[in-house]
Length: 116
Image 1 (tube, one colour):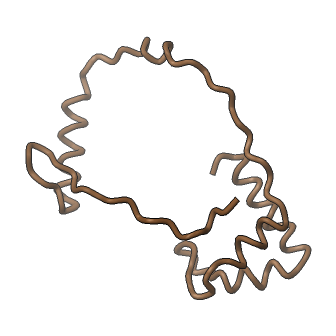
Image 2 (spheres, one colour):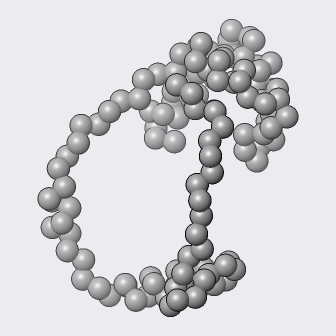
C-alpha cells in the first residue's frame, strides 16, 4: 500500500452564497450561521435512511513491518507529518530498533481499529 506518495492537489473553487464568493473566514462563518439557522426548524424525513442498503464492513488489514519501513523510508527527511514537528528523519531512526518498530506498528494498527 503506497500511502505516502505524492498526489495532485484537487482543483478548488470558492464557496458561493447568494451569488457572492466567500473568500474571508468571517464570510464563511456568516454563511454557515445563515444556512444552519435556515435549516434548523425544517422537517427531516429519516425514512430515507431505511432505503439505504447495508454494506458489509471491510476490515483494514494490519500493517506489516515491511510496509511501515518501506513507507517511512520513502519520505523526505526534512518534511514534518503534522504539527508535532516529528520529522521523517526521526522516524527512520526509530524504526531501526526492533522493539520500537513493533510499538509503532501496534500504534498504527490500533488507530485503524479505533477508526482514527
